[in-house]
Every structure is written in C-alpha cells, then in structure tokens.
Image 1 (cartoon, rainbow, N blue to C red):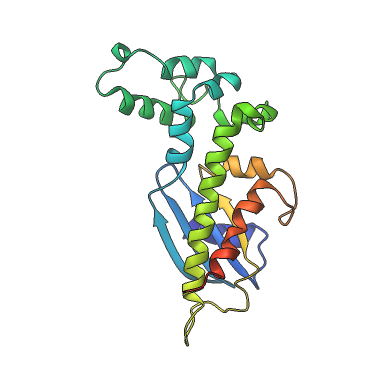
Image 2 (cartoon, rainbow, N blue to C red):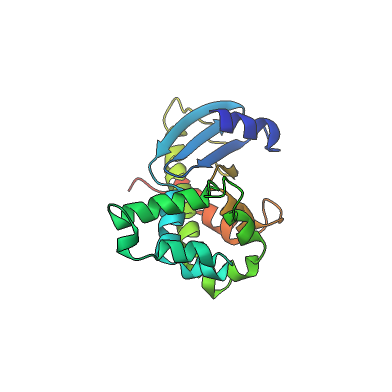
Amino acid sequence: LSAANYMLQHGGFSKDKLNIILDIGGGTTDMTIWDMERAAWKGSIKLAGGNFFTELLVNNTQILSGLGLESWAKSLNASPNDFVGDRETKRRQLAEMLFSGRSAEGGNGPDLQASMRDPWSRVTSELGNPLRHAAITYLAGIAWYTGLVVRHLSAGETPLISADIVHDPAFAVCGRGGGIFNMLHGRRGPDDRTEITRALSVFGKAVEQSDN
C-alpha cells in the first residue's frame, strides 16, 4: 500500500471522500480503494502497461518513428535472424528494456516519456490514435471494474464503504504505466472534461448497475 499511502498524503486528495488509486506497473495494476483515510479494499490484476502500451508499440513501430525514435523502431523490426531464440519474446524483452530507460547507453539513451512530451501533438493526432485508444479502453475497463467492487462493498446491512461517498470518487493514476494518462489529461483541473475523465466516468455507471 506504499504508493497509495503516498498519494493520500501528498496527492492533494480530499480526505472526506472515496479515493481510488491505480498503480500501473509493467505487468500488473494495483488498485486501492480508500473510504476517507481507511483502506477498504486492495487488489491486483495482471493487466498493465506491458499489455496496452508495450505490445502496441512493438507491433506499431511507426509510432516510435513518428516520435523521433527511429533507431528503436529499426531494432524492433530486425529480421528473425538477428534475434537469438523466439523472436516475439525477444522483441518484447528489448522493448521493455528500451521503454524503461535501461538502454544500452547505461540508462542515458533516449527516454520514451520525454520523446512523447516533446512532439505530443503527434501522439494526439492520427499517428498516435492506436496508442490513445488502447490506453483509454484500458482505463475505462479498470474504472468499470473498480465501480463494481465499490458497489459490492457499499451494499448490504454492514457495508464496508459508506454509500454516501460512492458517487463522488477521486482517482489518481501513478506508476510506470501512468505517464500517458497524465499527459492525456494535461494541466487541466481534476473535474475538467477530457478523454481521461470520460473514461473514468464509467465508474459511476458500474456503481449504479442493477442486479437484475
């Protein structure tokens, strides 16, 4: 719960509402739901940045080229003879190394997040649509899942979460895979309408889902 505790202490969250923290790693997404300042539920799923981010870029290397990372695209598109062992497995391992910053230059090579920030308009244009759509679909799915969890926790005679706060949650996205969501939302306010807040809004639909 360390990431969740840090976000509650330093993330500017309101301590009188429902807080949902998504810690998106390379292989798993850790979710923590806080009722006020109490951790009411935590869970983890094996779906994260490696699925919606790494796989997509490995199979759509033109996005990397469009971000000025032609050398990475060339490496990932190398012929099967250039890889020892299973080509797809090695491509993914190479991509994970490059995207995490553990480059052959000892970590001083190109940085994917920085490369995305500089020509960000390219990512938000047609070139980056596959990446944006995958990321938003992933986030909406996570929001729906956590909504169903909150609906269950706030039901019954002895609910674990107060029903009074379930309709006004505060979300935070952090971790290695969280950068793209922060960039998509930009410097806008937490309640401004963006692709991110629209994706997260399905949380409310899940909370209101009928059992029938």
